[in-house]
Amino acid sequence: MGLSTMPRMGADPYTECRLCPRECRVDRRAGRRGRCGETADLRVASIVAHFGEEPPISGTRGSGTIFLSGCSSGCVFCQNWQISIEHLGATLTPDEFEQQARELLVRHGVHNLNFVTPDHVWPQIADLCRRLRAAGVTVPFLFNSSGYHRPEMVAEYAQWMDIFLPDFKFALPELAARVMGDARYPELALESLRRMVEARGFLEPWDPSGQTPAERGVLVRHLVLPGEVENSRQVLRQLRREFGRHLPLSVMSQFRPNPRCLESGFLDRRVTAAEYAAVVAEVEHLGFENVWIQPEPLSEDFTPDFRRNRPFRANPPSIVAQSHQPPDE
Image (tube, rainbow, N blue to C red):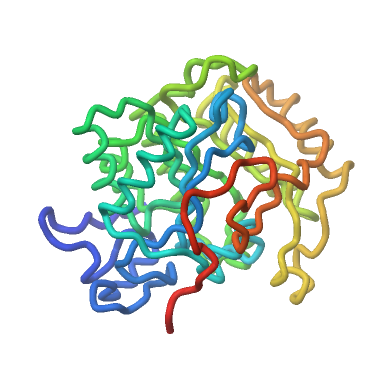
């Protein structure tokens, strides 16, 4: 795979944006929106102590999760569609962003700061991390992502990120093309994952109970899609071949069709128990050692509604106020 170069050091990455694989080259600094749907403004939908992540991430006091508006993937089935597709969120200045992150750390004592889909606003995320480390904040920083990245950006992410939590959504290029409009997803996600593992290794410490939260490393998530068991099998086989049986995995059954799925008739139902069981059987056949599975449906308390100041009913309220506002046209 031929890789293009990163933006020049010192250049403003927003003036000709190439932060994600879309490389739309839009001048987001001038107020235009890239393929991610966002300008150069940082917009945040929720900052919350989140208890719905895997046990080593949520731990006992929650993961300090920052849900960012916009997304470069644009998957039709996105579970956070209100912020990735409808772009709900509040605009924050760098000082406001730092203040609210600090409030989260002080108020809840969260185990980490967890940035959800941060690649398209990476400059502001890096700036926050720089500020917090300079101020003596030591909690791990976590890059929670779609897996859809420019692989050459991973080294830059790894300057600040201790934990990588990428999805590996698709092994089948034709499915990736239909769902998100880019058949390159499998190769981009695999190469990005290689670089994440090289930079940080596997998730550690490995404590399934969550009593000892993770401090560094990589955990890969895969969401099983209705009618797409073969895609999941191919994902698992590819991961086993590349990284071996000890790669930490989270195999999720929590798919819920969003309004776009229901309108289009594509991916418009839940995953059946038989479909999920077939994927788990493949996990066992391949001999993966470190895996979370979801044999029971995820509680409705973890179905988000970002129009509420408490997007997840199982979590405390969000710190970000007025997060229900979409961007001005």
